[in-house]
Amino acid sequence: MSKKIGLKIRGTRFEVDVEEQFADFLELQMIKDFSIDGNNDVKTLLQAYVRKSHELFEQNKKIDEILKKLEE
Image 1 (tube, rainbow, N blue to C red):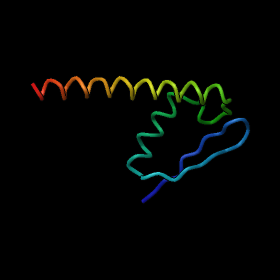
Image 2 (cartoon, helix red, strand yellow; image 1 turned 60 degrees about the vertical axis):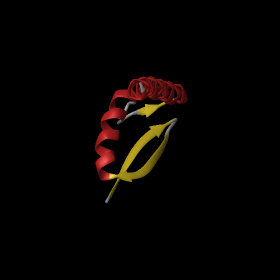
Image 3 (cartoon, rainbow, N blue to C red; image 1 turned 180 degrees about the vertical axis):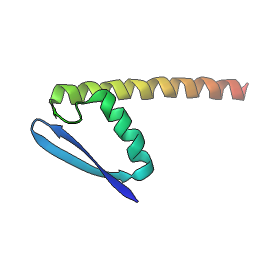
């Protein structure tokens, strides 16, 4: 089952269909990064992207550290 998640950027509303289980998680994350009920500019979108990319980078570093320890 899917659920629509929407966000307004520069006056245009964008909606995507995502898995319902993921939608709950995504909504919580989007509340942290965006104005859910208002308009968002491109700079806000870019900042959110960079922030999430950094989180992914840090997670990958931790995974690599764990893998190295397991290989020892």
